[in-house]
View 1: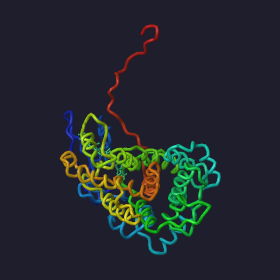
View 2: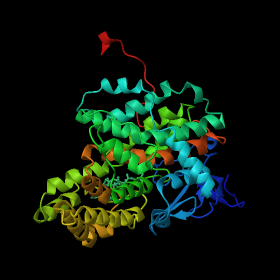
View 3: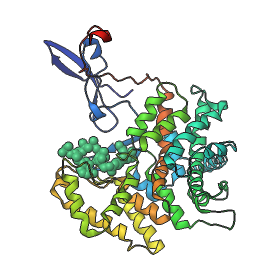
View 4: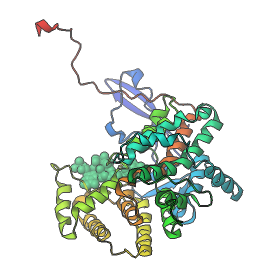
Length: 430
Ligand code: SDX
């Protein structure tokens, strides 16, 4: 529990004063512990949890005003430049960067869990070929709990550890399977001679008919995309995983809940929505019309990939993603991609527009990721599946952090606005 420092906040209401403990974190805003308000007959009210800390955590820190993102204290820019995805997975799960030997062991362990139970293949057969891959991922990830009865005791640290390894290892395999199933091609088994991202690309684009060696530059970009999506504090899907985990549900079910929450276009579904929007804009000449729509209170249209609950400055991941975008398109010789040109023009116009400046709306992680994924050849409807794959270590690290310490079942209250007590009226008297 964070240091209390003995400070209190005083709440004066209805003629009484309530002293509420103030707790300080390592860095960032202090929190006011409102736990004893209920005993005094009050609830806090904060729809969307704009001003609410749901837990304490040591995994990720975000400063939205400064555009800072730290994973266990390390800046995302340094991790993107000097680390790799599996090393970040280790860091998120264990709290420290691995030694060379520990990293080798971790990478080898993950490699040995990349295959899925052969019977899981039959589960895919139950879906329509044109099912959205996120619908498939919700189903098959939850179904993993039907295969691993040997490690579902959430009070057992070893069970939690092997489950973390299994989920990190199998998500790319399941993601690639959801793609192969949608195009009627055979599933490709993982290859242990390839690193994590290259193996994913192999399972996505390889076929039994010919040799397929992933492009190392593309594989590095894929690894960086996974890395940039790995964790992001108490976002909607991570909070969903914590809420599901607080009931004692098994981790596979909790991650499936996180995948479902991520699917929404306001959250992880935004990368797919960015590409749909850019294609709808279609030409730089139409951008002003869409900016106008985004500013119209009566029009639900928003510039997808812009804005963030926490970042009121550039999302630091968006900057790294933008550099990666240039690298990939340069490597593929498609740097003059018309979609990229529309995106760059849209970004420039929006960043100079008073509406976006006043509301501090900047590009977020989803703005450029879709363009890279499209350039790599990932179909648009698989973009959020890529996000879910990358976010898995973050979800499981938060779940494990909660379960490995004291926790309560999540059970918010409400401001009731319904009718007061009234007696039932039989139908013949209504
Ligand atoms: C992710 O939480 C996380 O950490 C999420 C994430 C992660 O890694 O887990 O970072 C990943 O989800 C990134 C966000 C991806 N979503 C989008 O790009 C969708 C477009 N963005 C918006 O839907 C919106 O910005 C949200 C949902 C991201 C944030 O919503 P908030 O914090 O609830 O802010 P808001 O909706 O109250 O917006 C504040 C104002 C509003 O105007 P007013 O009511 O004050 O007049 O800004 C406007 C909004 O209308 N606004 C936009 C806008 N985003 C906000 N107007 C036009 N275009 C936009 N994109």
